[in-house]
Length: 214
Image (cartoon, rainbow, N blue to C red; front, side):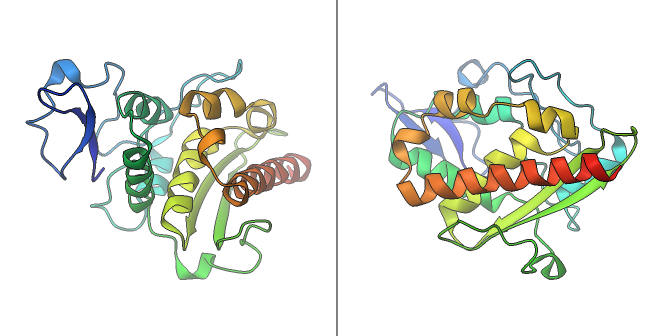
C-alpha cells in the first residue's frame, strides 16, 4: 500500500508513513496479525461464524489484475489492524484513499451500465466472476472501482470482506461488526452510507442469483 500506519516519534500520536518507508515503523510497532504475503491473494478472517475462504492459485490473479506489479489487496485483518493504530480520522480517510488506489484496475469492458451500482451518489462498478466448483453454492470473486477517491477505498474494504466467499457465506455474513470496529458508520455522510448499503445489497443479489443458477 502507499501509506502505512506508524507511531509518530515523541508525541504518542499516529501518523501515516510515506510510500515504501518502513524504517520509521519498527517491527514491534506494526500490527501483529499482518500476514499478507506478496504475490499471493489475501485471506479473510472468520466473521459472524463464517469460516475463512481458501484462495486457490487461479484466483490470485483476480486480486492483482492484469498488471503483475500490482500488489495484492490487504486482508480484512490488515485493514482492521491499520485502522486501530490510526487515531486521526483525517488520516484514516487518507488511508482509505490509498486502499482504493491499490485496487486492481477494472477493465473498461467491465464499466458497463449493468455493473453500475444503483443508489450510490458517485459512480461505482462491481463485477462478479462465479466459480461454480460446488453444486448449489458457487464462489464469487469481485472486482470494483469508483470515480470518487474515498468511495473507491470503501469498495476495497467491501471487496476484502466479501470477495472469494461462497454464496451461502456472503448471504450469512453480517458486515455490521466490521463497520463498528472501523467506526465507519459515524464518520460517513448519509450519501456514502447509502452507497455502502447499495454495494452490499448488490453483492447479496449476485450471491442469490448465482446460487439459484447453479
